[in-house]
Length: 417
Figure (tube, rainbow, N blue to C red):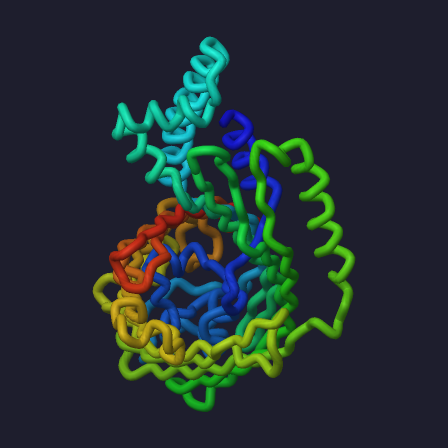
């Protein structure tokens, strides 16, 4: 049993993959506010959610040129960032580790009794379970226990009207089965996604902007791995083989899929903005996966009396999206399509009189609901160069919202301007 616990930790730190969906970039800012972002997009996140938002960079807050957009913190330099983040359902990790320790004690005790009396270990285990039914419950808790992990690496650049990014996003989703005779760990399919993308935005009027972007995506899959006590010693060789399977084909350009993203943004009033995007329009299958385009529509409300465009800038956003509208598997469960949230960003330390160009410390708080599950986020920006961010949200592993929640906790460090 000890081997299984150790194997779990090794795999969780050594392997990265992603589920069989479109490559998905996890924005900490957006995830913190329920991933409702298609009409917010006032910074580099426009690259991932709505390219039309690139027209807002260095325009929001310019009251002379765009009075209908009100007072907003301006970003004269655009956005250039390097990000590294990771995430996982830590509550599941801890609960699984505790169950694994209990089962380890049970297996060890059964083995000792079997050795002492010369009995088969399997027979002792069965007798133990028949006299202690509470142990059966522990084993049931251990069966098919998912332990997922995410990782993200991004290089981003966004200016007024133009933006691009290179990013890798992955996920490993192994599961543990306790079993009675031979516990094991298995990973269905490991996948690594890499994406290069860029796009432009054009403002036809002060209120209407459209955007378009192109992307190239590559997905590498690895076959199923099963690890148990019998093949534990071969674990390192197995991981090395799978690693070489993925890297040997990394420059196989025939497996690259091209796609486009489309977006539109309209400023109804100074405080109310609507947006829509049609992303992930791929022209061929991605590593054998047929990708459904992501159609999302939403609005953002930014009340004038909350916003402040000075050295000690403040902004407030409340947003709601109807996301992934074309994903038919979710159409009978509307909560899975609804995202909404709010955020407040406040500059705490700044050089007075420079209209937010020089700020020493800013904090962002966010909250909301993504697919019916609560989310929250926290960001701390230091000298406009270093940003520390944290967000938590949940993803549904079952067939409907509320059936099988997997809560994700993600942290990220960003360097740049």
